[in-house]
Length: 90
Image (cartoon, rainbow, N blue to C red):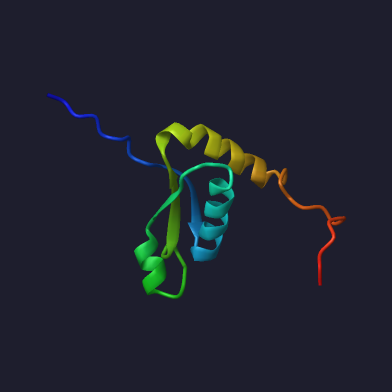
């Protein structure tokens, strides 16, 4: 008898450090994509990132990989950037 196991998460982006990882996680989750981190133990026990130490892999379910990659590519192209004409409360 075989049992179905969920597919392993897929890495869609690699960040250097916690700040970038949290921003990307929030961005993807706000668009309905489940996000998990891999490699977070080292970045939380050491307060530095260099030469790959402290890197964080952004992982999503395989079923959401294409959508996540598309959103990240569009983000890199600046599609979601706020313009200079957006009022900011001071």
